[in-house]
Image 1: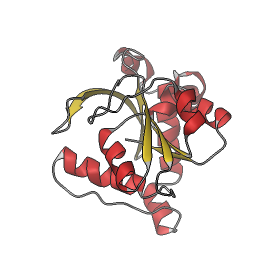
Image 2: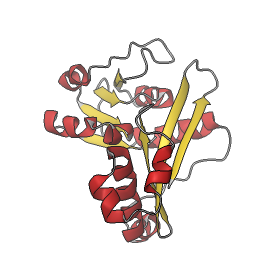
Image 3: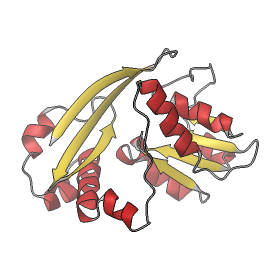
Length: 199
């Protein structure tokens, strides 16, 4: 098990993303989950490394349970196998700077959205390149995030998910919604199309 903390600032932006993750290995597969600052400390690695998988899935804090489930699912059916069977489509990102890779990744994510010009796209968890990619496809992003107050271009970011869900035609939810429990709220509160991504 790994506890990882790193910071990233994309060129041209003024936001430093401070990200924390836990990673769990099951066999040859790794699973991961981001979590909010302070939610888990590095000591979780000492306390949980070597724990049986069923214990992690039942009793661990939510981010660690999610990482363990991710690892188990990747072990049970590796992404490579799903792609070979036609149930997944690999997306190869270009080599290069973090900005280049983020733009390519988020263009691919936005390409999953079936939206009309002017569609209101709820973005639960704000990543600036994804805001740009949604706009390039003709969507109007409705950004929501617990930690940001504005996008790179000055768009206001709300921390009220319900306000966004009231207006959205489609919702894109980042992986952080799994660890902080808000994904369950999205599913309970909103019956439309949800695209879940990990960024």
